[in-house]
Figure 1 (cartoon, rainbow, N blue to C red):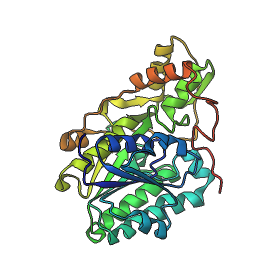
Figure 2: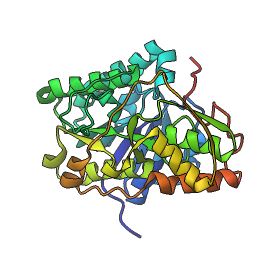
Figure 3: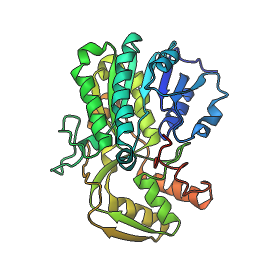
Figure 4: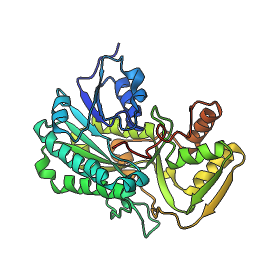
Length: 334
């Protein structure tokens, strides 16, 4: 049996859409893993098969609580922060909680980790930070940030705090700006573009799409997890204090591109396009840096994922598929 690595990774938000995939990748790579998650969406089932793994442990709690942080940091070598209130509608609905968790909680964690000096701290940010671009040129990591949502604004504020305090933080950190996630997960979401569009069209419903010519980059949850693994494994000098866009140049699409991919796989689809949606974001992103420095070659495509999702929906894999409590980030019990 392969030897377990002498590394213990704390994944904050490890029961979520990305986290539940990342945790299994880490365990497969022989890392010890501890998950801290407050199970905001009653999503403990996403980790069911991990519970019997001797290299895995789970603690339910709020990462904004310093007492809990101090308890979970025992023998932890690396920290990955995924936990956040995610999605523009959710953040608009709960602005105070969004700032408390996404911004104040993240900054508190960054400062608290100074007591433990982890080998690596990875902060999952978002390409939504680029917001509304006035040029068709894809945004690289040096592009001006122009957040158009509270969610992106909180991420930008945490990034700026890390950069402004780079000499005082006292440990190695890396920022990963992820493209919009897609793909099958153990905590599936149907409030994201690819999965939402696919669900509606695969079920024969009419899909309403606003501003179909706006651009966005997309990245599979497996590939986001791969990027995290690459940062954990890379020499410190390659990743410390660095920002990487996470995605692939070939996976920049308009909303209409996504619809066309789905309809080509289904053979049909009823779609209505309208202007004037609430989401003004429009941006392409360049991903050369992560490919060149960390040799990240992402393997998944929107087209391939759409085929998988259509098959799962057709087979009735998702029980009560319209259940907003289980399959999305729509509301909180505060």
